[in-house]
Image (cartoon, rainbow, N blue to C red; front, side, top):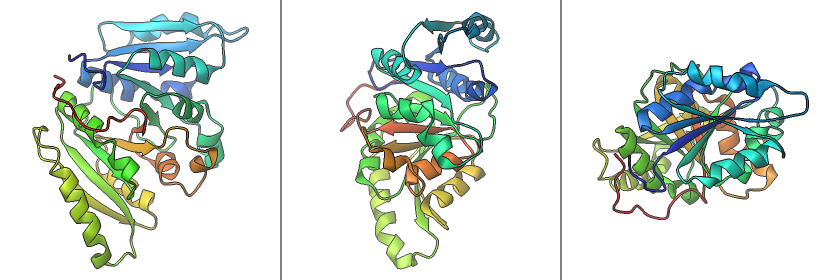
Length: 280
């Protein structure tokens, strides 16, 4: 595997002993296998906790030949997770969000949200409505979820690298309100096709899909529901204010209802342009 900093080199999965936290393991394992990357299980020790004693048996049960385990003995969990993730470039953090409830509980108040805000690494999230994938699955394509933000489009060079590494194509999925007149959608579709044409190094050409719905994230999630074997990617600005994760934001609403794993990529993680190295 390439040593390029933006190739996927490690999938880091924080666990706290709960069944909810373990929900991300199949999706994270599948990504590590397909990327030929390492998988590492992490727990942050708390007073009176003994979850660390279960890490090794859990690691041995996973369908990978070598799974690392790490115990962090102190510090707030989000700080410890972000610090460990950012020590190795090419890390993807895998986490599950909370059970079905108000969005402030699912994202705003969760450790997952604090990790997204703190780390420079992409974070793979399994939301409360996500299908539980098979750890032996292969992702069939990357669905780059867009809502018109140029910030989101800046993550495309990183996503192109992942597509080459995982050997799967890209689909640019643009959520739009279903009452938008077709004539108003045409400029967006042309711009997306121009972006798709800028991904010549991927074996399969990138495609474009306009996803209408009651709201843009609803349209995108309807597309994801029809493609359960895709890996969705969405962008969030590094250091975004807390309000940006409240109801009504494209990223938060998408993650809350997504039927597939969603990788949240911060602007700090995305390169400004692709380089010559091609992950294998």
